[in-house]
Length: 301
Image 1: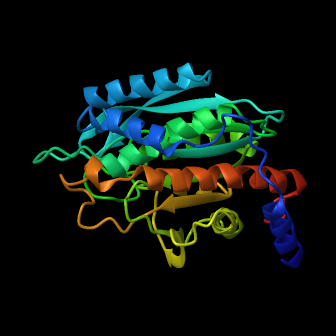
Image 2: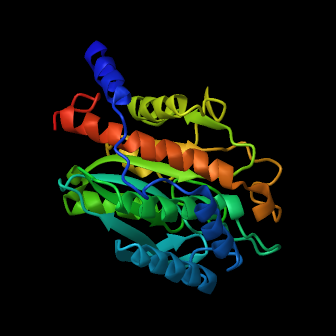
């Protein structure tokens, strides 16, 4: 463990290579959230989510990113529902993959209009802007920016109701042998709250969480990245179960707005999106360094 700690510390001391025009723009990310919220409620299988997906794919193609769609049919308590994961690929000098993802669906409610500005909207807006910034940076590893469908439970969260898209992608990668290609996963969810308080997710890979928190400290964002822990099952869970180092960034302290009609744009801030985007862009080069040298879990690269 001492060697692992030294390796992590060395990686955190390295400067981040930033190309011209590659900085994260929280205002641009917020504008994407605004567009997505404008489509209205976007539960899995809905026409509104299909429109949101077309917007996401179009914006990714504008910045020259290769995009593929992974359609599948999820068996839910309400019967089979067609779903689609969106995968943006940014090739690097190496074929090994770092995945950064989040969900773009909103939870289904029949009794009110849930537009999910933070819960579904914020992660999608951040990922679109992150893809633009990463596309302009040198990359040793290949990146997948993944927009997961069906993160929300159709009814009540359970082992079979929820995280449909991430479960499907992780299972398909394991079936075809490509899971070995995936070296690290970072998932973002509900990161647009004006009062941004991100706690360490208890089940996430510790060294990967440490790396993200190290970037937050270096950038002066300690007030938003707290050392308290909280266990949250999210789209990182299927990859953890597959043995892939994975971490979740989530501000789960979103009462009283979570899963209510009040999850609207006025509860969000471009500044919060900026903070998380800055941390990711700072941490990813250090992550590449760790993976090149042999990540702290002990697997040589």
